[in-house]
Image 1: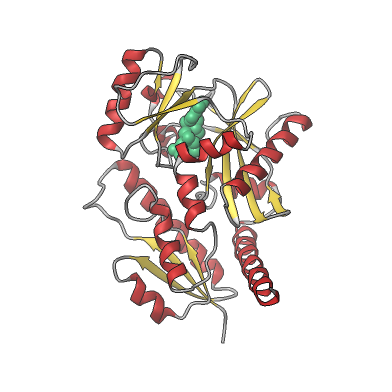
Image 2 (image 1 turned 90 degrees about the horizontal axis):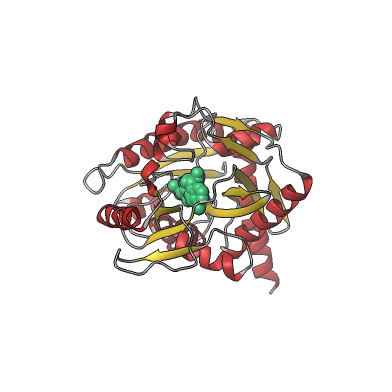
Length: 336
Ligand SMILES: Nc1ncnc2c1ncn2[C@@H]1O[C@H](COP(=O)(O)OP(=O)(O)O)[C@@H](O)[C@H]1O
Ligand SMILES: [Mg+2]
């Protein structure tokens, strides 16, 4: 019998969240799962599984050998961990990070505390549960205000960069009314932006060519950073420079920090790390444990193509990376 892979994708939850951000992310995910399923059918038996309320029964019946979860989950601060948790309960091996890895990566405040502890440079920050808390006197404006547990530019617009306490309080209140607390406030690093793709595990990671995201051609009213508007509507005006023109020394520091960030959060198989440079000092903004994989459009496939990988190569490498990790894990268990 052929090896069977289940590609798991979200069900659109308009009754829970009807925002433009949610619809846009859902559209991209559906297009991604269609192309991934088509590619995998070349080598494997593939079924597509919607992550709805019947998913436990569907998974039991599906008899899959491996799951490829693309889902961001339904709701809650650890939503990306929901499907991995179900898969672990059913003892179905799956591609990508586990419950804790996804939960920590999605929670920027938790991730930054772990980065700090492990000496991975990240912008200075403060966590706000209400706008009444006092701003730490060592934080310097401009600051950026972000929802703590979101991704894909959700809740990130030009006016998230604030220049004084009045603007700060207004933006904290605004995010608290729309997103679950806490709100993360960090120093805005004015420098260049980079993103780094990783495939692999342990000492067998492949760090893809680093990509610079340049906002010079973005009209000023959208800001000079990766807002939701820039990500979703202005990709034709965004310059993607890969490999990024940086010194060998900076590249080595970035690769070391990316590698460490991946390991300390317990990520698996694939991730993408966002970075801002202050001079030549790299600050880690966040790690994406479920990076976008839409062909041509998403950052990771762009970087993979610069490493000489076709989109098909990328998808098969992700699957093979997971299979190798799972197989090694099983052998280790048997030996011990
Ligand atoms: N501290 C910061 N300094 C400078 N730019 C930032 C900072 N934090 C976020 N940004 C900008 O906002 C974008 C989105 O922030 P990020 O934390 O990566 O959230 P998301 O999960 O939505 O991608 C980044 O790609 C970057 O352009
Ligand atoms: Mg990001």
